[in-house]
Image 1 (cartoon, helix red, strand yellow):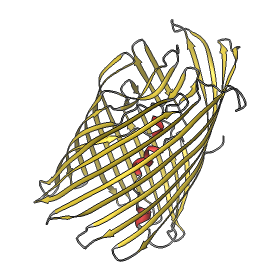
Image 2: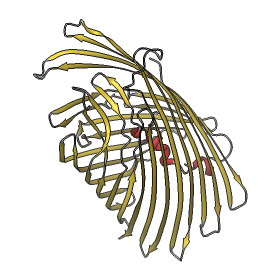
Image 3: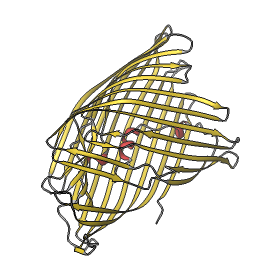
Length: 509
């Protein structure tokens, strides 16, 4: 088995134009090679649930990605009262070259070949570019107030192709039913205002953000096009009050938007086996939520939060029958009508010993979905809970370790429900080379328990899902800090395109 390879680099510097003005830059990049392969065994049953035949699909999908990003930042401090201006200009490029070789063999129950093998070869180049400008002002307003304002404009363009051939290489005939070319562009312009102040023992914050979205999609192969242009407002309000020395009460109301990733918007249909495809959805809408929270903190170590959230157009994974293809399904992302979330969270951040600190969090909640999809109405209430624990250990001045684990009682994705899951990971790190270097060894999912096991139900159709991936991984990394202070503004800065970069992480090209 060929291991996955990843190489990353990051460099940054600050230039002090004056005592009040700093100009910085960041350059980073990575090259990753993923020699993915998998085997899928599919049993075929008749209407009486009697097994008729089976097929085995072997796939090899090597992929190489090249990611580059640059940031220029400008910071000017106007006075000692804290008034300052921060400007970020970002560019990022994500390029990939992927291939797939897939062969399916068909067998009778006596293990004889039912028909000849079917082979597919794919060439999957992809490109994504991000441009972003962001300016933020922060300053004092009045005696006890703080005023913040900012603007941001981003432009993203993706260009992805899937070229599928009926055979083992690109000299064989093109499969026109699976070949596609998709170009997508998106421009988001936003501005925000925020005001906060202290009133006696209470702190108050309120703000408003406006976002305009202009998006265009073009399926070059089929000639299908779409465009969107809309403006949305996102208010927020919060108040925190110290009712006594140890307790602080808080209440907040916020509206937020979560946009689909660029990979989710890509309409390509990816062959997994003869009965299962992965399908993107270019018509996905962003999901928007109103959230109400009431919280209490005790000694800044123990936190209790009650939360209600109403989400419209929630984005979720669905596995549905493929229209016109008997006994064939596709996994895609879709918008459901609404999701109501009622939950309680308890978090404790404590030091058990001087050398052992832990943060443990537990949630209990109810999901209520409303939707209508593939002729099936959904009106469900499901109770779930989870526990997370993050433990850090100081072994010596230069040696430290951590153990992290979680347990989910299950997952509720609307039409798809998954069984309980748990996992345990551990790591150790050492400072070397006069504390300028850090050597880290980490093992994730030690007991290989991150399994996907669930079921989806529609009228006249249900699908059982079981997936076991290579989630148990051993990572060895080394980092070295060159130069002076590690508190460089540029090296600590995330830039102004973080939202777009997160959406590109799973772009697949």
